[in-house]
Length: 432
Ligand code: CAP
Ligand code: MG
Image (cartoon, rainbow, N blue to C red; front, side):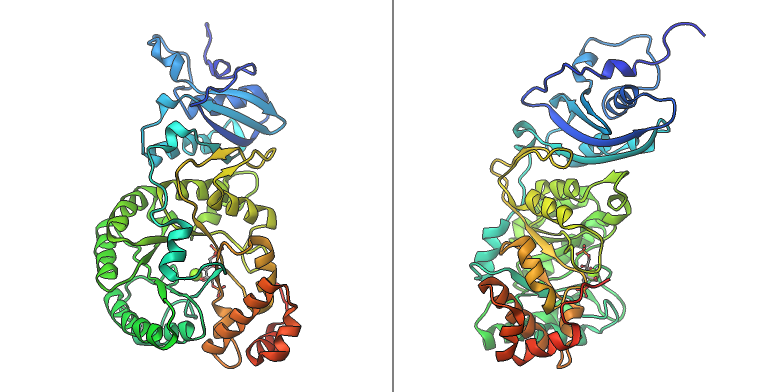
């Protein structure tokens, strides 16, 4: 063999200062044996931008300007800058094909994790973000300050539309704002979407009449995009202002289409993240939840599941806080090895959603982590209340009130039998 085989090191320049409109990514990486950190960094930059595995016979001069540059290597972390010309305006799917694509399969790397991407103003300005945002939802639901609350009928799936709507009614009557479909409930033989919408609409009107409060729902429209459009139409025609999509399994392309479609109908999108843990759970490989949250806010969901830290599903307090910051803040500062600085410009904030294994005894912990600006979903933890769903929802609202006022749950429970019974059953246990 003669001549140079590859040109990976041309994608590394430790003296490079990113331009204002460069998109910068932070990766965790572990090279395979025999590969230096510098070569590994060059390979990541190359495969995610303009490179290939070998030197080429001819390169038009433009290529140099389009290639990515690994400019900071710090132990197992590398920062890579991408020139703006690499990315199509307003196409988040194309961005993922680059910075979250082939690179995860490279043999030269043992592990690779996309931690965060700092999106420059010039990139963000081609996206609309959430249609409603946090303030829009608060206005819509007429709830000014406290966390919004919701529950999924449990067991997850199997109720008829009529049973489902009745449980929803009990949930609303207990003081909750939203009734949510589970991620695997769409339109099934025993519970068709149309029928569920019809019955839920009737009972929503009844609950609103009886309570004088606004009542909403996250009805799951997940399907192929054309079917989702029809389901969104039906929600709009029945006076709903929210829909739900399983955004990871549905895919960014369909979420982008649905964002536009739903905003024409005045519908906010509630995003369930089922499947995220397949690529987010391993701390050394895959894609972080906070990066997923960033993409979802960018393409316009209004609320996104973000974990509990104390409930049944994975996610530490630090993870959960990072995701909440990405969704809610107008600007985030760099946090060494964890987050990159981000200025969201005119993109609205989205609600983080705390869900999974919660019950009234855990509400103060969740409020301590998230503060008021969240949607709190307590499902098994209301339907499993010894006096049933309505009492469970009441107990949760009492726990929320106590947490916001800084009162101990045990004290509050002395005056509120629903909370008292919830604490008798579950205490303050952290679920698994
Ligand atoms: C919660 C939930 C949600 C999870 C998803 C469930 O129910 O509806 O799907 O919260 O996880 O089916 O488990 P429970 P995450 O309150 O009864 O646990 O929110 O972390 O994405
Ligand atoms: Mg669920």
